[in-house]
Image (cartoon, rainbow, N blue to C red):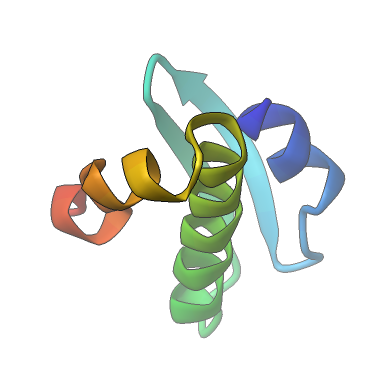
Length: 68
């Protein structure tokens, strides 16, 4: 579900290269890194909330906590 949304809503400055298990790898134009990160986080959070509901989604680890 998340991959479908990411591919459907893909902005012109980012391109999905590789989905691997619970991670996604994007090629992002220089200067758009923050926008791309916020966009991916928003899409993933919305999808998780839709599936799990508000309460369980809040208890799930955030995307920001898993980025390096």
